[in-house]
Length: 194
Image (cartoon, rainbow, N blue to C red; front, top):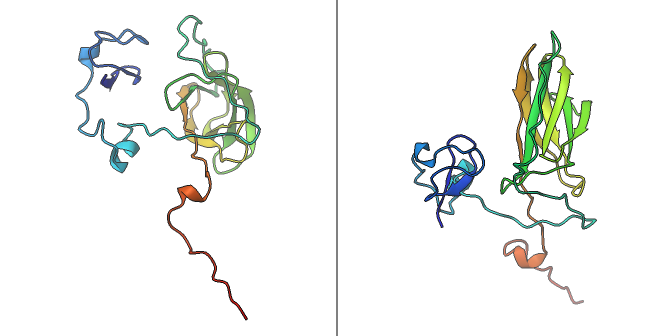
């Protein structure tokens, strides 16, 4: 089965589908597919045309519950920000587009780890930071089941009386499974017999 991104919601759907099952946009209106689709080259992976799935485990064995795109629950209503402040809204998904509920998200001043506001995603993977003073911030998507790994960051510029979208996509980090995965490196130490 061949997949192609929807022009409206950017989720991958079957090429022979007539409309996107997530946003009901017609598939024929999508832009032409990239020549990189289906190739496992570095350029294709970094361009987002191909997804390379990596395995990961946590030190505690816990993982966040992931749900496929919930279309039954109403999306979060984002209220207009208070005068002189802004609002940051976003949705957190994994590398396959599944929503990640109950995930910690923090808003910090850009260049610092000084958290201004903290929240968790709801059942639809959405979060909202309201009444944020204008300025440059970083949205930090944290994985509590993988505290030893660095968080995923997204830079946002909050402007007065505006709503900023800061959607996040979490990619698992590959696990070092031992020397079998390291074909290169230093040779074993030589023994010296005296």
